[in-house]
Image (tube, rainbow, N blue to C red; front, side):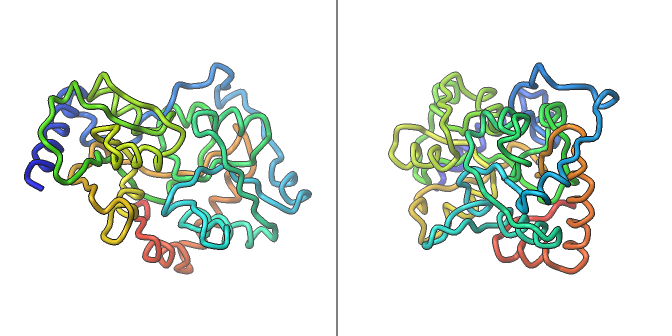
Length: 273
């Protein structure tokens, strides 16, 4: 465990130096490059997505398999903090939800093409995200953490092979720490790489790390101790979408009536402050 802590602390120091000490304190890390098709807020017209989802009687939500945010139970039903919260929002709108697994790196393409109505999957608020879509009020807190085997030997930082989800906030942080970054389709795949020994570490959301590395899980031999960033989650909508204001209104109601607090305790996800 001492070896593991020394490696993690060394990584944290490198992160602070590379980022000019900003990466260890500021929120909202960029997830992926801004789309060249984005419009300025001043030119965006209102998009009638609220009528669209009500006419279809469903809200189509882009997700990835990401415990404890969105994952499937033994019967194949999508559950998790975001899954349950989005159902509660849709119920108040009088419609159903449909979850569509997407390639996270293509999330804005899926959104703007109309394949999905929103991105609701623990999406980190960043300048890039704000450029590519409208966002809800922040509803949960998060950080990026380095996960390694608990008995990991000290390794020169630049030589670390770090696994990440492509297009994630973790990918941006990993590129500050190492020249050997392996980008995969999901955060869960990054964990598997560390467990198998094909990667020295992975950088993932603390919400997933808390859930997936606790005792009794398949990844209980992994651990973390240092957060590289402080972030918040928000829901992404098309630019100008009138769904943004409606979802914000309902999220406010669910916070007031205790629904969000109940889900926070159930899934171990911190609410936004």
